[in-house]
Length: 362
Image 1 (cartoon, rainbow, N blue to C red):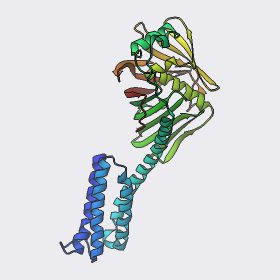
Image 2 (image 1 turned 90 degrees about the horizontal axis):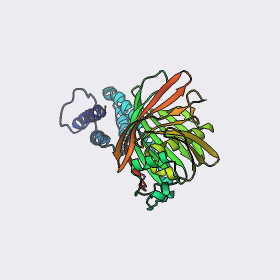
Image 3 (image 1 turned 135 degrees about the horizontal axis):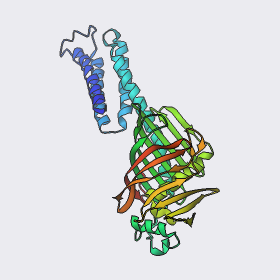
Image 4 (image 1 turned 30 degrees about the vertical axis):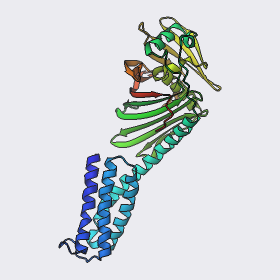
């Protein structure tokens, strides 16, 4: 699609070259019955160069492309109106470019809100150079100690922030899977989770932003980055996202499990109960481990399914481990709702990369 749009921009731009050639008498253009002044000819040439330049910026993913494209469309359309009889069909191409540019501006603006939140939280985060030792984990249940040793947290820095990159698939009940990519930042001193997702839903670009910060939580999903299809700020979202935040700690930021806000209770069969406190809100989860020390599942009954608005048991069974950034982490897991009528896997997450204690919010 990107190459096709680049070709479209280039062809649309080059068509404007006819006006330049006609104005300066470089060629006879039968399709153009009107005469153009040299000033108009220069403007036609500028539009040619502008659209080609826009195409190059578009391929380079430079955000200047949509601003220049909007300007080029406006000038092009003025010239078309002036020469309506000969050039009116160029309006269709201009409209296509304008629509794509407006969607791109909306996507950029939506993501900018996420990046501003990340930047603000990054500035307030403190980075520790203190290393995790045996003393730091000795108060934890034996299965959790074994897990942290398996992951490889000993001798590595205590983590205050994490950036995680995912790809995967998601779906709603009764609907098809759609692919997504996501980027998120978690901050542990002041529990914060900023999750930004990009997806293709039924062929249409869709973006979603989950914001968990300062005792509030929200979820906003926009079709074409313009039309909200989900906009939730209900109070119960905070408890739900607290479960998600703690789930993140367990799966791809396990070094954070030495946090004093977690209360532990050892159960049988290599399982433990954890209660995580954030302000006045507490959530609990059962963590299951195997003999190797791997975390194999996380189950909580403190999440609410947004679609049904019901409290539903939630789990994230781990399907694969791998080494990322020097840690042996769960790199693939499912997200499952345990509805009364049966289990429903609504998400498949594949961890692509992870960065700890980074002050860079780019």
